[in-house]
Length: 330
Image (cartoon, rainbow, N blue to C red; front, side, top):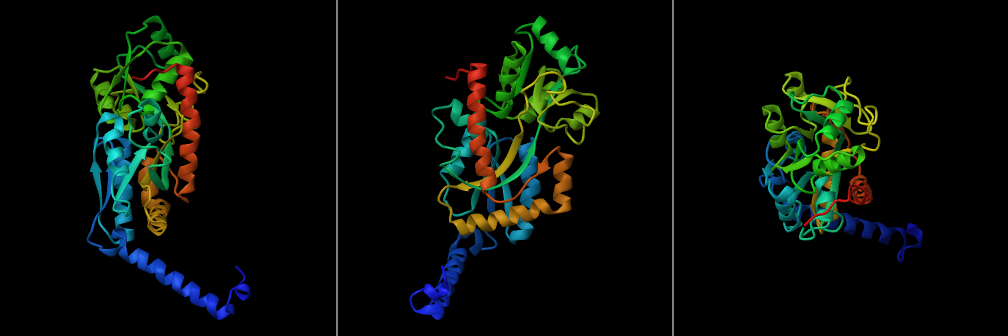
């Protein structure tokens, strides 16, 4: 608004601006996320400890705690394919003290579970996009395949004899696995786990044939699993010799996974903005970026609407996957 057009002129306009600033300060001061530096902010991770979502949350929580001057703790609440922890945050007080650090399961679960008591775009206020990444297709050493092409050929010759693990029905790895089967004309049995890290452990131990995971590099280096391809638009910077699925002959399997931070819907905008600024600042720091890149993550950051756009894009993509893979969920 032009100050000279404001009733009472420039002085009145400045007075209103000062009142607005004071009101904003009052809101920040009364928000639990700001008022008591001793009160912790909680990152709820709807997965067990050890997976990429958990690891990335701890890196971010540590640095944001220093930036905000408040304890930021990680609370792992696995179960029901990420539903338990996600629903807990959706029902938490909208004051910035309880946040959700999650991945693409936020988009996929409501598409496959009518009983899920949350909506990705209505139940949460996005704080920011933490990172994007592509999971690796990993298999146990005993699988007679040194390439993705050989894996597909082996699976076609042995329908129903191979299995893959995910963090449960509706998880990102589940969608990738089912779409992989649809694109390659294979039948591979899905085994749900409580987390992708648990599935990866069983692949390394020989109890599971394959999974899709972004934290497999140490096991690849140790020879305990084989990485055949990357499910993403680009190669993993840590494993440049591993092709993307498209380069390996499976076109269309270019899922870019993501990690993000969200608050319950209704969280005051100044609280969201303060958390977003702290998050973005943390993700710009060389130490945080290096630790993320060591996990195969590409740090993101930026305004909250980047995560909103991601969620909107997910809805269209995963409906396409459901249709193409002819997925049915009880």
